[in-house]
Length: 226
Image 1 (cartoon, rainbow, N blue to C red):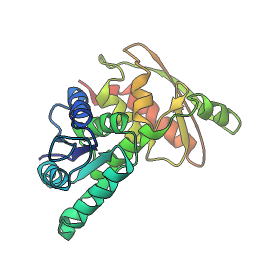
Image 2 (cartoon, rainbow, N blue to C red):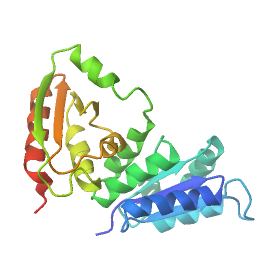
Image 3 (cartoon, rainbow, N blue to C red):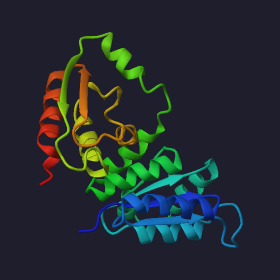
């Protein structure tokens, strides 16, 4: 069954197409559609291009849309308004940086994420704060900490990273992995951890212990990979 589709709306056709090309490297089977530039090929947005992209990207599981500038959002919202109620309900505009958000959303879609999970993955790309801030804040509370070694051959590549983020996001606790936010797909992928690497998991909050136990079991089980 086809998964969630992704539409990239930009004032520049080159930016939209380049973003889709980049994301497709990590999500080759996900439906990614670029809607950039005006109908005449200039800078701007096109109602017709966006409408066509929404239709092309929606295979029944919904569409996550990422836009670059304010007027792109307005044009996209107008296009959504012209959809019927069922179609409109399957469109989510994600407030996230276009390139980073598209990559994060594409990885989530490629690994079977729901519409809500794909949109949430895109939004994790919004953070640009100090990556060690979360760890410092956690150490100020009653943190639960455990370390585990990566046993799967591929380490924390796209699919296991998305799996880890999905698990971490199920808990109310604030969770970090090697000092970065465990609910941010891009930060987890950015760790570049391979087989044999140590994964330091830390959490604080009402379900911190359960969160840590869940992630430790996930890593020790090799993320279900052969």
